[in-house]
Image (tube, rainbow, N blue to C red):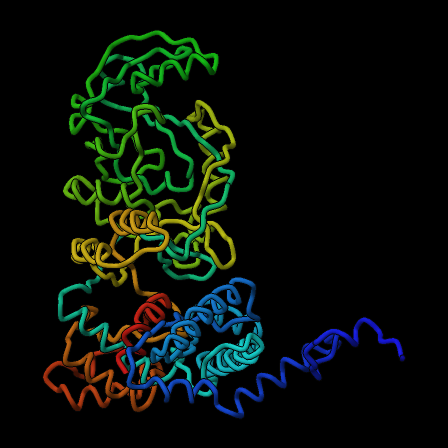
Length: 544
């Protein structure tokens, strides 16, 4: 009797699959091609078409560079969810999409074509489309349950038109306005930035305690008296317009190593730690300083009355000297206080800094005109030292806002921008958060905190590659008209948004609205924040 091998006595399944997949990439490609050839995704959609829908809207990744692990994690999780819901018999269309406008693409094209005369919007358009195709091929390797021939893209003229219509709806509801105030500004890219485009990193700055002379107190005491002021941005000192104190705080006139200084009471201990000899001469109330005294500006401004005002809500007694120098063009809190005391300011609140960070003649200090603000920083420190106006300086490291793209430090800069009134919709937003199921549960409270703290959204950018803010100007005053905006959307749907930037839309608008638009009317050149492009994707895509 012939002996059998043990394996011959076992009932094992037989398969043509190799024991080892030595060429898994080729195998996966064949599987994908078979799924596409047999149109498995489309057949499942058709089978479940009349069943309960499950719509998972995919927010668009940015079309710039290769996909990374974050993209893969995002799409694989979504794919698992869509496949599961499809297996439950639900109708599950899943549409890919791409975010194609914005500064990263524009910046890359400017660098790639340096010194060349180009149609910037056209090269950005072509590059974005090439990135979409490259990323789509990468996504195919994930085997996503979708139709790769059907996708949305934010540079599509229909999408752009719908985005402009959404803007028009917000305008009709009074949610859009033009504001003149300091906002985060990138001098390198010469544009405004929104909070979502800001990252915080440690930055080294000079902490400066400097003196500002008080003529009134000096006359009264028969000896030169100074206000002691603290700043970490010395370059803003030449554009100082007011000093602010805390009315409810206690201040002291002190003899500090032979100099008379006015500081908040809690500053005395700090001076002693620095090795200063301090003698208290007189106690003062913050309210006694407000509006009753002027000061000698470190950089004399002819005819200016330099006044002291109330700044209680912004002044921390534990930090600084209790006396804050205000440069309204470069600080939001400074601007708020200055607007409240506009009648005391010499001239108008205006910005002496060009978009690229260079000071113009409005700074009022001839030797600083044409200098970059970072250069002015060191010049001011040296100048104040020469005049013996610095009590203490030291380099500190602190958390500071940076541009998320090139990691360069930002500044606040006074400029006119377009905003969406978040405050007007905040109550409704917070109510609707409670109507959503959140996973994990703690994220609901996190979202509430974010919305509650959110300020109005700056949506304008001073760039070329994006959807235009459809505002015309007459005598430099904006025309915010919903009928015009709707008509702009109609034209963009037909021609694309290039018609706004090449000016070819203007004759059509004049013909349609002869009573509103004449030969002196011109088109605004700001584009919408790219986060608005992706932010309206739920409307532009799911509506259809």
